[in-house]
Image (cartoon, rainbow over all chains, first blue to last red; front, side, top):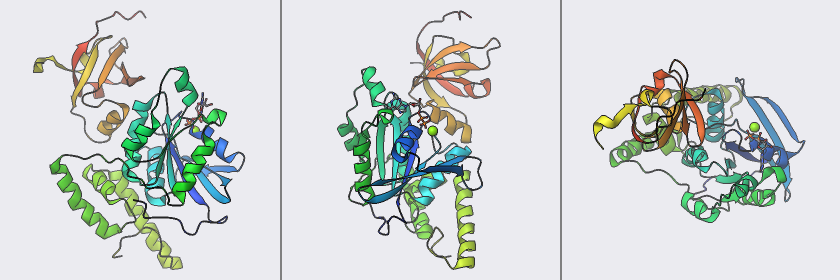
Length: 255
Length: 89
Ligand SMILES: Nc1nc2c(ncn2[C@@H]2O[C@H](COP(=O)(O)OP(=O)(O)O)[C@@H](O)[C@H]2O)c(=O)[nH]1
Ligand SMILES: [Mg+2]
């Protein structure tokens, strides 16, 4: 389930970790706790959305952390959601960590399930565990992890509780040593037939550069914003190849 | 439950609990409302109406969300409980 590893990571080429999550789940707190002062902010290319990136060292390896904009979804087409979606789909972080609010699991699950449909290398970080305890909320992370097919780690980022374990789990996944089986919703037979057909043409166009099933689902949903993003990426790539002869990012196979 | 008990959310009264049945919205707005928790089968509570009845506040998965008539008139559900309480302010 983890076909892609990053064999070239080094101090100069760190593992890339993206933090996704609803607003107010403690993403920035976690980002700060992980990266300390080793961070910088700017804008995402061509967007007014803030881009925060930082780094940390763990067990001899360098990690870059990207604090994605907080969103409830990746499908509603705000600039924030486009940035988060494009990062997960096109930049393919070595690990995407979904940060959830332990006191609002139901609401947070929408985004978590969306990310599970988009990527294989996902860790769920259930934050604000101290708040949950105060409210008498118990979370069975083993059972959750089994049902969702990815590692689940509980943290209280503000108290730095659970961060060691989170870093360890991220390391294991970054090295491609964690087998995942992300939960994917199964739709009606009629829909599944259409998904399969589209999935095939997506694969023949993009190879394994994009998650074919997910792209097929978004096409069926008529997601114009994703279609625009795909076109942009293809154009960008053509220019790059033309100017520098680079040939490694996203573009259709037959181009 | 008979079909006649299905009402648009615009007709919900403060205090009533309504189970979402279907939506006639399309496109991005439909998606946005699904993301907010207006999902068929889920329960919402009518909180209060502003003086002119627009917008109306709803409680959905522990969060308060105000919808304009434009949207709430296109979300349908059945009343499953709660009484009408005169808003105190
Ligand atoms: N009690 C508690 N509060 C936290 C924790 N993590 C973050 N917070 C607080 O939650 C609020 C939102 O955190 P922030 O990092 O800005 O969330 P973001 O919107 O996801 O980036 C802030 O007031 C944080 O101090 C935690 O583990 N426990
Ligand atoms: Mg933040």
